[in-house]
Amino acid sequence: MEMSEQTETPHGFTVVLESQPSSRENVYQETALPFSGNSRPPKEQMPEKLREMRHLYQYGRESVESRAGNFYRQAVFMQDYEDDYPWSGSGFIRYFPTYHDLTTKQLRGYFSWRTKVRKGIFEPIAASCAYLYLYELLNGVGTDSPKDALKKMRDFEAGYIDSGIGDQRMRKNIRRWMLEYAVVNNLPASYVREYADPEMIARDESLAVLKRPEAFSDEEVFSALCVFGGKKTADSPVLTLDPARGQHLFSEAWRCASDFSWRGLQLFTLIFGEKKTRRWYPFSNAVYYEQKQPEVREYALNECRSFQCKNGLWTVCAYEVLTFDKARMQGFLRETDARLRRYLKTGRYLKEKPENDWVLPYIDAMIEADRKAIKEASRPKITIDLSGLEQIRKDALVTQDSLLTEEELDKPMEAVLSSEEAVPMYEEAAGTPEGENAADLPLDEVQIRILRSLLKGEDVTAVLKDNRLMPSMAADFINEALFDEIGDTVVTCEDDRLILIEDYIEDLAQLLGGTTYG
Image: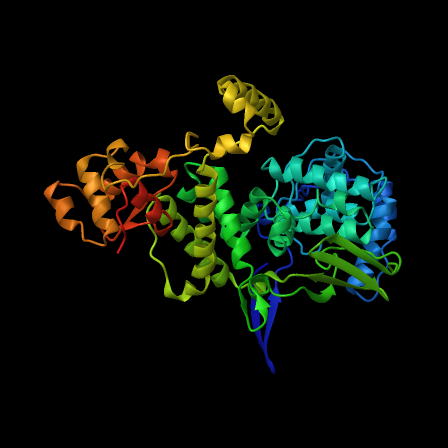
């Protein structure tokens, strides 16, 4: 519209607007709106089951308990529901999600996904919706028994997480919930160990072994040490040539060191402490509805972990990982590894640390005991067949009678044996001059000279230099040559100095013809 006339009045101006358009071109025509008539898409209908489920939700105080109760009622109502609707809520993220947090389309997509999961078909879905399925299992929805619920949790872990489809961060929660579910439902401990966190189970079992190492095999003790020592202990060169021997030495070191005490506490307690009792809150990080107060009970999972329920409150008694003295444990393992490398002459030698001196006497005592055991085992065993002694005696008498003359037969036997003509049974042992025995040994002149000098306490540096021998090489040659005689290392090389093993000094002196040490 436009102004067509303007006139002056006693009180001002009067403006008259033109009521008709001046041209047809400025007239607006009616236009149909996009969704007028039959062009509007039909409104999607909510399945009646979902509608009824929503009506079950009880509004009021939004506490943790009320949310869990609403979820439980709706889950039981929907436990047999199936759908066939594509999931389209990829951006859905909720902490402690329930059905009430999903739209109708998201609910239909979730129940369609669950329908396939129950048939063993796993497909991607928002992690928050995957947690809904686990919450159902924790509340016993869609399961025949507690054992069936645990099995379905494990199947979900394998099909959804192990396969790489789902979020790997869910695994820690699943393992925790499986343990809690088994304890709360009082399932057998042997059955529980298949589902609980394997790291926790391995740690508990290893603690039981290290607490009583004398009751377990070398392999079991060494495996327990590796649980706390990690890859370095398992990959030690001590185990390279003979794994069984390496495991034995590590295990014996722990058995010996277990006697170490400080302020009245032995090594195990110094490292791992005592078992402690604290409150335990099963399913505190899940949507779980406690249908009834749990019964009073005690539940022993293993020697190192137990649970107790009293007045509806749970406690757990176990060793606390956060209080472990890892530095002391690592000190024991490192110094054991270092000493055994030198003892067995294998791998790169490790520098010992002064702060770990407390354990050295126990490791050295173990090594000394091992040396003596090897020496004893190498000695030849003489076996006498006592069953044949009687026949030998009879044969000797027959031989004796055939050698005696008629005159001697008339004399008593005592007289014959005491006569001057009697032949002595043993000749007096004669002394062995120095060097006589050495000729029978598989040693060359230089090696014999080195050993005799060491027995006399003399320095052999000049001998080695004159013969262009490295100390370590000379030690290896001598040990190899005398292994059949001694059965063990007789000389070691430390800091380029040759040192005789004290246990075999007397044996060497006899082999070399009476050379004395001093």
